[in-house]
Length: 72
Ligand code: 9UX
Image 1 (cartoon, protein in one colour):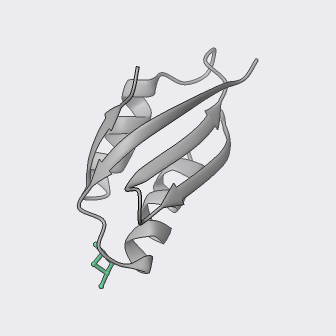
Image 2 (cartoon, protein in one colour):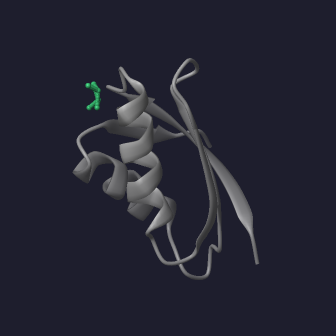
Image 3 (spheres, protein in one colour):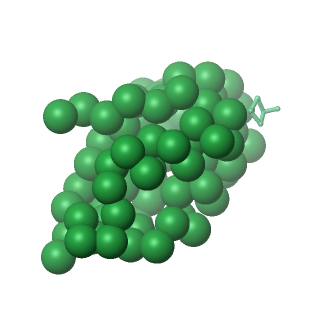
């Protein structure tokens, strides 16, 4: 099972921020693909909804030091 969610991220200002967000999300169980765009301030995540909730993706990004909200 796979779903794609886009999250709006606040607080990314440089390329290292992008890496930090990517890394934080990629390590979550159930995530198969992450792309982060600095210009649009968005992350697109492909994940298995049986293994992971969107709120957990949000939490991981916020734990890394950024604000995140999912488009629904
Ligand atoms: Mo760049 Mo981002 O120096 O938290 S890593 S601003």
